[in-house]
Image (cartoon, rainbow, N blue to C red):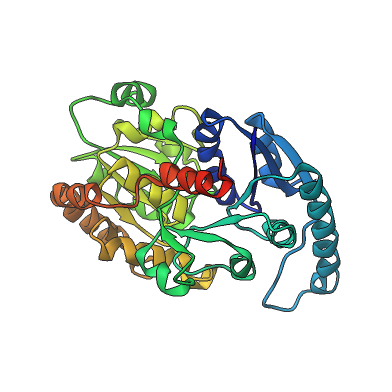
Amino acid sequence: MKKIVLTGGGTAGHVTPNLALIPSLKERNYDIHYIGSYQGIERKLIEGAGIAYIGISSGKFRRYFDPKNFTDPFRVIKGYGEALKFLKNYRPDVVFSKGGFVAVPVVLAAKRLKIPVIIHESDMTPGLANKLCIPAATNVCCNFPETLAYLPREKAILTGSPIRKELLQGDRLKGLSFAKLSETRPVILIIGGSLGSVTVNNAVREILPKLLKDFQIIHICGKGNLDESLISTTGYVQYEYVDAPLKHLFAAADLMISRAGANAICEILALRKPNILIPLSAAASRGDQILNARSFHKQGFSFLLEEENLSGDSLLKAVSETYQNRKSYISNMEQSEQHNAIDAIVEMVESLTGK
């Protein structure tokens, strides 16, 4: 039986692309194991998918001063030893890494054992963990054409990001029924990231009466961000979080407003939804969302509204312009080559296993 080790962790964004690959790998009879940190978010997600999970010690690489900088290298060394021991015993045909700091010792151990490694970089520019791993990689997949310039030419492949196939299987009518909305008026779906965004939430609610003149609103606002004063508002429904029915809400949406995390925007691209991206500001991040959003804007996939320019008025204008030009956005997304990542990556895995 063919064997593969998946790795990556620290955030859900380092896990969900791996989850998207698992059904196709199972169809091709791969025995799958996952290496993550002892108690990271990846453990619950992967074990919930019925995949064998191996926990290893993990530390973080920081560019700033922190007392943990003196102890984390020892955790990484321990994790390297644990990964090396497992890989030596299991002997996978290939390792696929989605990044995050837990992946570094796994990738380096695979290199030591001469096991082929495929890395996937979601953001425009590689993060520190992937920069450390790239020299050990056989192939490096990426989401954006611009990222190719930051990667070794002989290793880099533009694939887009693996998207869970169930997200593409939503039913518009089921989504409208779940949200108790009408079939006769267009719907805006607003997602502010896994924790929500107070800035985006406030801008939406500031212009809610004006938006509701022409649209219905599904607002996924994040834990603790419900506005009880708006619960009975006709045409407006809000949720802290949505799990299984999310695919149906995606199907119901005529327009989306979203942050610009790599996985989120690749889902939007796969769904061909006209969208407004409001990237997390550089003051609150390393600026990767801004680069992601600018790339999608440049390719004609998205309307870009940077957080520094976000207000009720600017958001209202963005909604009007994006909806009026929705056919153009859809056409541009339909011509993209960044939407068949699962098949591209699984074929790459197959070519490296030689079986």
